[in-house]
Amino acid sequence: MKLKKLLALTLVSCMSVSLLAGCSGGSSSGSAGGAKVVKIGVFEPTTGENGGGGFQEVLGVRYAKEKYPTVKIGGEEYKVELVEVDNKSDKTEAVNAAQKLVSEKVSVVIGSYGSGVSIAAGQIFADAKIPAIGASCTNPQVTQGNDFYFRVCYIDPFQGTVMANYATNEGAKKAAVITQLGDDYSSGLGSFFKSSFESLGGTIVSEEQFQTNQTDFKAILTNIKAQEPDVIFAPSSITTAPLIIKQARELGITATIAAGDTWENSTIIENAGASAEGVVLSTFFDEAEPANDEAASFISGFKAYLKENKQEEIIPAVSALGYDAYLCALKAIETAGSTDGAKIQEALKGVSIDGVTGTIAFDEVGDAKKDMAFIKTIENGQFKFLTTTSVE
Image (cartoon, rainbow, N blue to C red; front, side, top):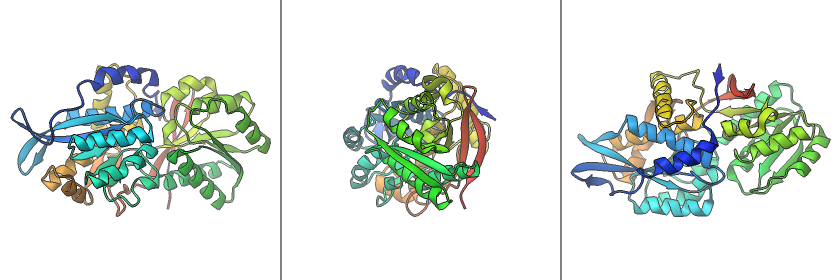
């Protein structure tokens, strides 16, 4: 089973400019031009370090809205309006973007790609009593202590364990971990991998950290090379990933290079070139394995949508998650019978849908009850499915 190249980051900025124009602003939930309207906020980075992945998530939400443009509230049909904001992959900008959504009086929020910006904005949504549904923000802190944040993806303790299990099963005894200072996703996932790998009898021979926007990793990698690890686990952004990969191979490091879900992006293959061969990662979805009828319909429909918008007809997992987050939002609005955020938040606790990424229901913390990940590798310039993995 093969997953072909994902959406290219180089196309992202062009599409961001051309598509954003008609997707934000407008009146608050209620009626506009005679039609009743409910606003859904889209809180995502379309620029900055995570702009590529964020835009892929936005595309999934937009397609979901195109397929399901209305929702029934108390027997009346309401038109859904998306209010999109760019949190710019930055924690300070995330606060500003969240405040804008509050001022726009959205009823529920979808996002964000990037746990750090989700955590930064979480209290703003909670204070305004507006529920947020994360698509791919995997750090546990996103939902911990925040009754108004939910998410449709699995979380990093699970993802870290999955990758540690895979590395161990492949014979790895020694591992090095590289994480980004100040990045909640990177540091959290690296920590969970480390603890899981050690619990399985492995040894962490090197732990290295790098600064945001760092481009030279030779010193870090030279230290790692001296320890001769079997695997290097380096959860990072799609901007940093190809730099780490290429520089590791240039130094003659032959260890398996592994990471989490953010690395499922074609720009890593394009920018790392042949050095990307053999990289291993975990992710949420594989288009060759549709979970249900909704998934099968999504795969064909979303590919047509991508073609129509001059994008590569490849489905990133985060697009599928964005779609599922939208479905959860609609179900909660309909169940609540209201555009009021507090009522929608209460309804979300009992929501259950058959989404593209499988059946989704939320636990007491607001996390999706998921127990399976897809493991993929890069082979011949493409993402290739290896196996599915679960944790007991």
